[in-house]
Image (cartoon, rainbow, N blue to C red; front, side):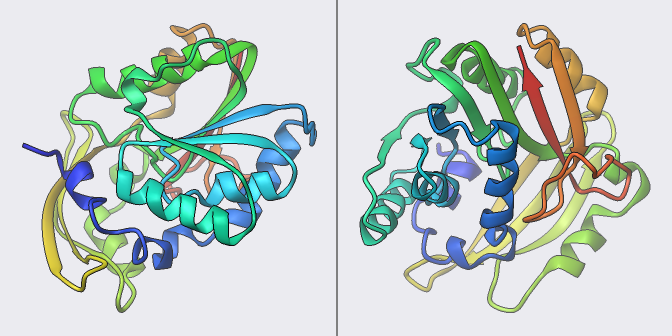
Length: 253
């Protein structure tokens, strides 16, 4: 039986590109460039690349990027977009929990919950971090976003989803947050690329900053900075607060 994150992306690439939460690519890539001092020699892996928005934008700016994702439909859309942009980018189907790379990249990015925090167990989520760490060279840097576990302690996740919903885009309902597991269980309603209305039962793991720090330190990262993740406006000036739905993590060996 397919997990919800596999079923969701079977036929949901064109519509996915129109969702409000994927519209911040330019500003997010500005932050990535600044973090690597605009060093074009950097070799970058985009884990959970989806339809390739960050990989395409960074390649357009002159970086060497490969994209990996579990969904062949998403990868097909990414290849199509890259071709339309006149860019040559390698997109590969891999499970983020078991990437076939070792000491190959200077930077790994996992943005917009591109794998991490979507898995059904904490062990599987940790396997993604472990796999990303293994893909990096000895001085490699990891930049990713994840759901901020501080947010549901002070706010209703259900109300947040309602406020963020826009006509014609996916919707979440029946949200319930489990304080024992820090998991949000919800039903997502969306229309796939064939126009079929579908409903999937999802569950996502939220993390508190101290958990992220501990997990990354156990993988050999020495410097770990965590910020509030503002859509399209990532910045080291954004101190993480209980108002941030997502956190932005920058980890260095």
